[in-house]
Image (cartoon, rainbow, N blue to C red; front, side, top):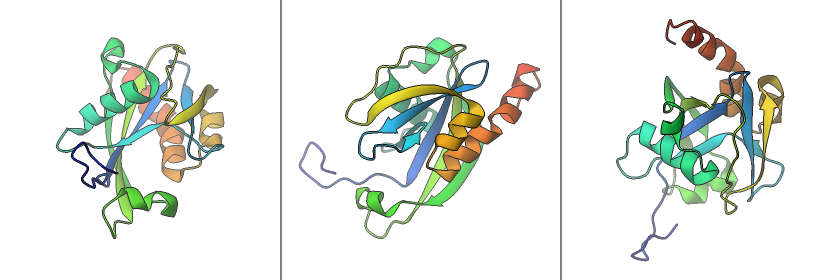
Length: 162
């Protein structure tokens, strides 16, 4: 990657995964433009020294047009998973970087909302029931987060926190 000063700039190996879902646990998935057929939730790397909630909100807005504050803001699950970066994306990170730490967030939008895709990043979107969404994801960490969604949401719905 090259920044505005024409200097090489790499992604940080620290990212967010944002599960956008409805009250009925339909999950938003996005199809990657650079790898058609690969479906995922909103993801993105932290920029400079922004906090992770800011990263989650920025990525949501960039990739979907959703303003998190309009729905009460993103919820930090306080879950971080390390995974090996797929070889086809390692060139985006500092040389020798093979592991990323992904931090999970979610946003309950109540019911499906219109999405404004970043066509540079995604081809299509779909709202799917959580089990079907988990099955469609190519990433094990994304799939695991979606499978945990009902257990995460249930205590919050009862007002007992997560």
